[in-house]
Image (cartoon, rainbow, N blue to C red; front, side, top):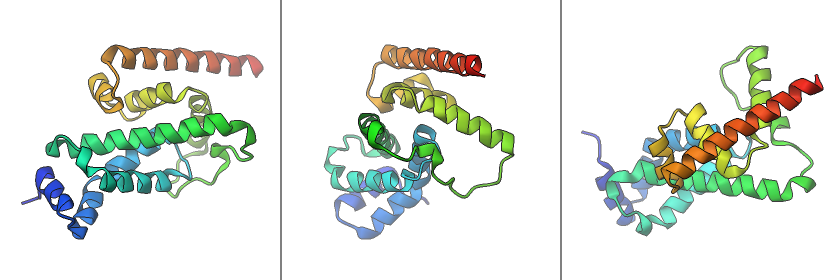
Length: 182
């Protein structure tokens, strides 16, 4: 029978080193997927993934509900992704390589049209403020419900809806600007 989240948390709190591996095995894929949804195909995703689990191991005492381990890790992942996005926005003027110019990670080979579409979409999404980008990515790329997005981003449902609406409006505006340039 699979270990419960509460049992896994108890093992982690008792400094069971094998429990760290079990935590990663259980939630590494979820956290990585969330990071890819927010950051896109970004070379820093593995580093942020590592940071999420280091933060989890060092802040386990802050976990209030042992049964909500997945949501707690998702919250940490969102926080770390937001921190990276904000840092990039502050230092964008000195960065010499745009994140979409970095090599793609290995995956099934999509068509040229799909690659071009995703590249264009993430160039537009990359221009959104961090909170709007996160809400938009979780809703429309990852398919999360509004209440789940509000919970993991520690925002009210109304704030979550506003962020998504602003992101949609801004993306339409940016898309229309691009069409006018063609």
